[in-house]
Image 1 (cartoon, helix red, strand yellow):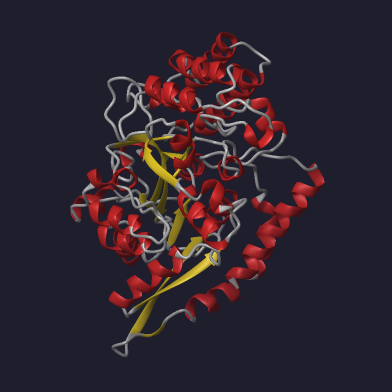
Image 2 (cartoon, rainbow, N blue to C red):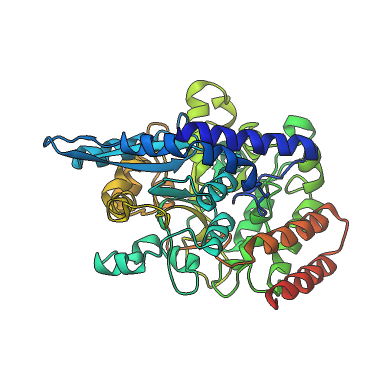
Length: 469
């Protein structure tokens, strides 16, 4: 019955979207900055007429466990079940240790996941015990709606070491409380093409590069030419995070500041690289819809700053032959470049978390699964699928580095060890609005529609106004 309700919700969302006309959201390292509104009232009649069926379905989920008693069934909201292998790997590992528990997943789809989830949890028909949190703006919405259970007391009672998450949990505290625990995380690295450096006779990037050193290196390997003969020292995708957020690595600033003067040196650095032909221009990249993976796989990009999610894509695409190994098969990794005085291994990141809905009547059992899924044992299970878990200790890093196709050099292995991760979007009740403003003026600056100074001034003015509300 649950799947029927979800299907109805998705159908309502699709119908509303078609009626309003088609729009396009720019992809980003984080999820969408804004959240579209879903009309929960449209699904109310379907939920009410199905109440009896829901109750019957709930009663039918208790099966006999290994000991002959009742088996606890936990219902978990996820997305992309068929294409992401870590979901089932986590379930198998937990059920093996807990044979009296069954994890039942509901795939809400990826595109509008947080919108559908918010609608589900706001209605009377939700029976999820565990929900996956895809992004911080969506998390802020759910916290504001009061539909997530605070985890502080459980974390304290079970002595959960939040330090294992490299500071990420501190950045999603909502009024001093934590409503999610991360189970997977991605962070930014520098991918580089060894053949380009070898041909230029330039030393490879290192695991401790300041922004100035990184810029000099990009300039040293840039080669003039036409078409495929042109070599770019660096590449920046069109996401704001790929340019602006170098500025938050000092730990003194974030996108919540309300004053973005600290971003000016990074806009100036990258706009100057565009002017000097060190990287493709934002205008050309955006107009051609050039994906960062295509830019690197063409074999004429020396360095690419990108998230760890690209690692398995690169490995798998080379293995399948989709990428030409003669162009980009000789590659390596190093830690993200950082401002002067900042510790090496400081980087940007995103998290995916797990929460308990307030409507669940199996909160203790749900917490036991979340505690496992976010812990060190499950981190190794997740890493074995080629996915980065939220806890990246030495054992987990070694496991990822042992994946077939991962570079064999020591620097690439060392690159997986982070010292501090700053979330691209930390928690704030206004984070969706803030992201929208910053995205707008980032595009204007990079397109050349406004100057760096004027664009930053507009960011300062409009975000400050929101923060005063």
